[in-house]
Amino acid sequence: GAVVSQHPSWVICKSGTSVKIECRSLDFQATTMFWYRQFPKQSLMLMATSNEGSKATYEQGVEKDKFLINHASLTLSTLTVTSAHPEDSSFYICSATGAISNQPQHFGDGTRLSIL
Amino acid sequence: KNEVEQSPQNLTAQEGEFITINCSYSVGISALHWLQQHPGGGIVSLFMLSSGKKKHGRLIATINIQEKHSSLHITASHPRDSAVYICAAIGRGAQKLVFGQGTRLTINP
Image: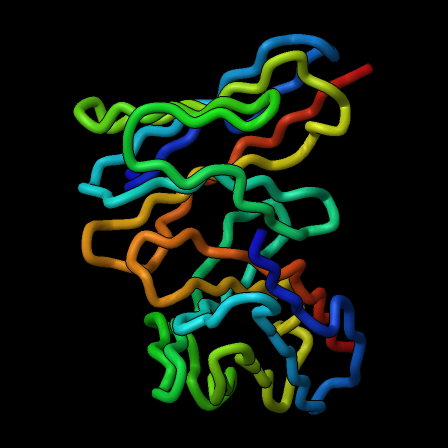
């Protein structure tokens, strides 16, 4: 089946640092990628939808200058948490889908971000 | 009221039991996902279905479009089935998933 690789799986860094998370589709062309955030024991919250070659569409309440998304190729999207603070600590997970409608979304394994 | 409602929220059962998790939705959909999230956080898509029934191993998913209801069944449950199961609907003409709250399943040996 289709595989989505997310890296890193776990990161701890100091407050004020910018952190980049990568999401790669390994065996299919991901025309659309989604970035989610998940707090403990809560459901996934969509942050933004990213289409290859165009600007990401952010959900209401998500700061686009804080969470920079780049989807420059059909196999890679990146989420950069800029000037991270402890309240940004969370589990971030991406998913990807191809160009054909009604294709399933394939999820990465997630990145656990801890800001000290 | 959420657009996608799951029940139960928590379910504990003994190994070998037949498990049913329910999902009801209030919007028109093009398809519905059943997802499995293990304690480490990674998510696996178990099924995507828009009608009828799908089976994979011990897992069976059904959907009734008229009643806006889907079920996930696990036969001969095993402790390794312990996870959070999430149903997620895709609206017509949309790409975004609308998630249920998840069902935390624990299978005791």
